[in-house]
Amino acid sequence: MHHRRTAQDTLTAIEMDRRDQLDFVRADGVAVRITLLDTSAQLIRTNLDQIKVEKPGAVTELRFDCTFEIDGQRHTLTREVSTQNSFYEPFEIAGVRFWPDAVDGLFEFMDETHGPCRPRKHARLALQDASRRICPPPLHPWCPLAEEGLDIGECYNGDDTWMGGYFGASAHGGLDINHPRGTPIWAPLDLDDHFLFNTEAEHGNNRWRAFRRWPNGDLWTIQVHHVTRLTVPPHTTVSAGVQVADGAGVAVGAHDHSHFVFVVTHPGQPPIKLDPWILFWQMYQDRDAFADHFYLRAQRGRHTGLYPDD
Image (cartoon, rainbow, N blue to C red; front, side, top):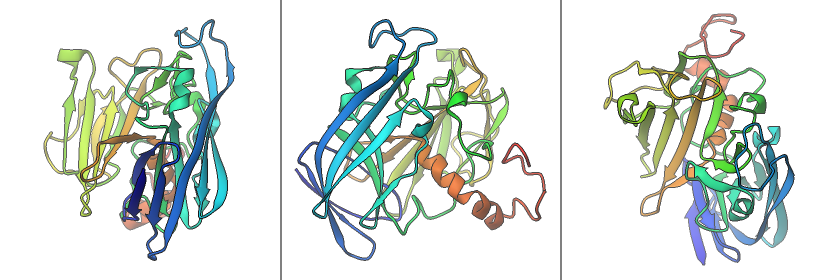
């Protein structure tokens, strides 16, 4: 199949089968020809007694590859799942930034019983012109961010990254970050609407969902699960940086944590779930720029609560 996408001011998400071609038109008008040649997944290590059978305390680490021909040159992009390398830097090739998100082959080793996340095709990836951000405005931290970056050890039992092996056996359909009950959850960007679903009285959890419709027609959906309460009225617009909820308190299991979800829907296309790390990656890129832009830190040392050592 042949696809054509033009770089927008927001991230492009796409799923591809082997031999699919994508012409990705950069901001300067140059089309980059991208062909998916192959995908694969390999087991690095596991202490499961049986593959795909959950075991408390189990750890499964995986590696996957996406091999592309990009403007006539062969490139293999390698990722790891459920390791510290889950928090990776995107690849930049031919003026395009690549986030290889997942391959179908990972499900040779994992089930999909902890949130939908399996690609509908052989590979799922996100792309952006390398001269652009993932969206026009700077992103506010979604929750207090460790200054040195996200730590795999603070992802539930050290495994619940996006696509990580929950109890070693089931791909995790979100990103968990351990933090105390009541930790503030902020709007990372201006939001058009938000509300709770699967509320505690009905489903034993509080899950928050919000939307942003961009001028180009793209719809971003973000979610945070295990929140204890909303701190702003539902079904209202919310500005970036406003605290929307207290996190990490309902049906959290072994550790107090919040569970983050990110979905991109392009006009006329089905929704595509992506690694929330992409948002956090941009937040880390933006943290000082955001603080300066919104006057959150008028001077060095002013306490904002954005970072633990503030």
